[in-house]
Image (cartoon, rainbow, N blue to C red; front, side):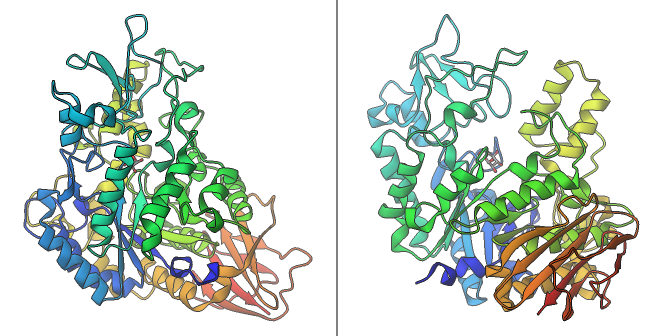
Length: 558
Ligand code: GLC
């Protein structure tokens, strides 16, 4: 099979955060039956694959990213029967389902960790990463992702264990072959139950050098763990092993979440000949609006920087490897609030961002509600936030001398809870998400922004996304066309070509809230053109085009 024939190269993935998608039993928390109920909606949108954020048993220190049993469904989400029903219904509708596999770490409530910390650890102590302290303190100065040292003292073991995330998320020791075999078993268990692939959480962190001490310590005396953990010495070897031992027996999609990965490494992870992953999520475009290492040190995103980053990835993975394309997920704010205009031009700019991304090369991911142009949460007080990262981030900002209102405004812009407010199904109470009391506040703008209204409105963001998805399925150039950036220096227009042998697509997107003139550069033959997509719903002419605010147009050139 040629690489162009891989099904996932023509697929669009929709990400469901089950906790916030649809609650079928009124306890205020979304669940699997709720997802099953809404599969028809996803079918109607036209996507091919549904990615479910973690659904395994978890004490929810980090909303499911702390697994306490890899073979049990989180009770608040339902049962194994509900899961089987979801898979059956999805497959009947022609939808594939991929799961989130969180195996860099487990929960501290996982049986393996409980045993590891007991007087009778059996083989389990070596399932985790233990080190002696140095000079009465932790083994090195790594700062955990959620703040504080990445090492926690355990009095029974008499050593520190590593947790790159919360203390309740101890890191697994991938150097131990028994750990890797246990992970392989878990993967097979769900693949044999019918799942169509995995999104692998922080999978580039599984191989580390714990002896590495971060050199760049901040004022808290702690420094980044990335230099000692990202794409560590055996990361590629472990992924090749996963492929050989498990994945090669199934025709599935794998996407690795890989923070701090540069394109050259992405090629190694996703080059089909190396047999590692099908694609990865890089973070470079998610970092254009921060200063330095901290996600809480924020600045305004500038389109030219976004353009530079996205274009670099398009070009770097054009020949070998494959891109995944995303604007948002459960860890990021809403794109329309972050990169465009969530006020007067919300609908226009949501369509523009969608067009810009969906016409690129790679596999697009839509995060729930993005297809409605959902906005940031707009929480007013700290107690409305739930996310451990946001609450710790707020404390860190205040401890560093920021006022409470400054810290709150940073959360407004960047908190992960922006993406986690319940899905807005209708304009009624709790947006049709639940009959109970929602676990996280519903955005009051659901009276205007909701799926029911969007489905009925031919000009909605939803119907625009449907057209984008159809275009990917119908037009070969969207998958295979060569990416070429044009007007590299334009301050407000992001324009590119997807070139084939005889024809091409020209994509023109405005980031301006005023009208702006587009003139095709020399060498772009706009003679015979046809408007394929226009976010203002009218035919356009690429020669001498006046773009409306946040307009996006796609032309077919032949
Ligand atoms: C990933 C997840 C994020 C989680 C973290 C730790 O980045 O997307 O939600 O907190 O890993 O598992």
